[in-house]
Image 1 (cartoon, one colour):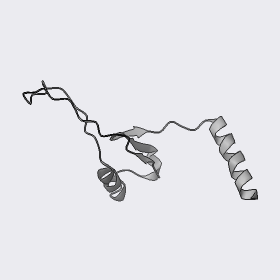
Image 2 (image 1 turned 180 degrees about the horizontal axis):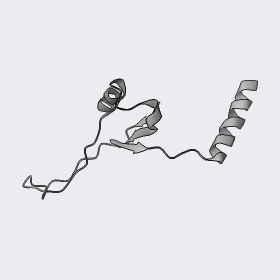
Image 3 (image 1 turned 45 degrees about the vertical axis):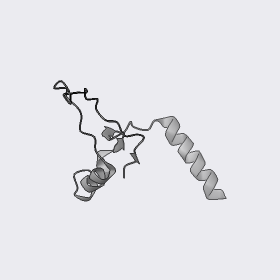
Image 4 (image 1 turned 180 degrees about the vertical axis):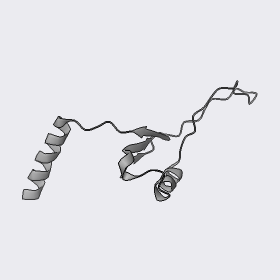
Length: 80
């Protein structure tokens, strides 16, 4: 499915008077909300996304080097 990684909790900066100056802040997803989106079918195996630092990011396609190394490693471990 999709990888889920939470590295750190980032909060938007707010001035001492509580006013953020009207700045647009992205909505950061929690693991619980991300998992719920999967359960409800909003995200599927075909979406090719992952949760990074609260943001849902499209994964980069794997290249030929990545695929070749995976194949070699799989062949090695299946012989053991």
